[in-house]
Amino acid sequence: MSIAEVGDDVYGEDPSVNRLQEIAAEKLGKEAGLFVPSGTVGNLIAVLSYCARGDECIMGNLGHTFLFEAGGISALGGVHPHTLPNQEDGTLLLDEIHAAIRPENDHFPHSRLVILENTHNRCGGVPISGAYTQQVAEIAHENGLYLHLDGARIFNAAVALNVPVRSLTDHTDSVTFCLSKGLCAPAGSVICSSREFIRKARRIRKQLGGGMRQAGILAATGLVALDKMIDRLGEDHQRAKSLACGLAQIPGILVDKKSPTSNMVFLSLDKDFGLSAKIVAAKIAQLGVLVGEIGERQFRLVTHYWIDDQAVGTCVAAFRAVLSV
Image (cartoon, rainbow, N blue to C red; front, side, top):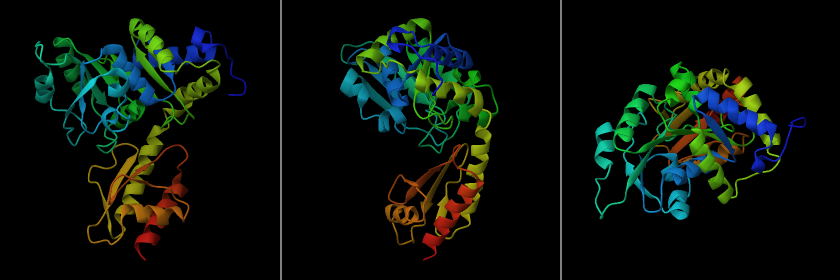
């Protein structure tokens, strides 16, 4: 960061940002990329690029855009979410996607966009195949809709499936991925799509206040992330398995049967255990371990670059100490 070559990115003159955008687009098989502050901003820009006010966007009821982006597509874009049930594997049923597409009728909003998520956060960090994504793309395109992929952890998905990342993004119209999750950069995401789309997205980024000046200081970390951090994601997945295995041995803990499929471990407290997830998390924090509570009796734990083997052991020991009292 201290030696990053910088310029004014609002004018497209920051060489570090430009290089990051080019490399990101090349890796994902797209024509161009756009550096944005976060994945939420990236997803919002994508929706606003495709949809006019009153249009409808089809997405999962457990998807990040629906659950965790503060209703931004509606508040800022007037876009109506049409949610479908996510299956356990993170997918949406193809027949339900097809049925959700509105016919032309003055009573209905226009169906414009389908959003998928890969890996799927709330479905256990599960990776979604390129074959499924292609099937959804075909349904969308045959009916005049676009397909956007919230690929916050798309490189985790590629590593988990042992496939080139482009095989998971080739059939999408756009994809957003995060530099600040498993890839370990301190901030930032990139949207990748066609050059025409990115020209429109750049203007919307400016409207949202996302235009930054010497952003190369941050983009430099993204360049390191794409160069150094992808090939080591398998270590995070292996540590997630070790973490799940250790936690499963503790009385009172139930590890999700399909967890982990990448770098997330989902677990819950046995119904007969007297403490809530909130109380357990607070007690574990006193032992120096922070865990995410996602329900009255549920947790989500995520492994990443800063979680080494010792940290996995420390986490298991902390749960054991609290739950054995």
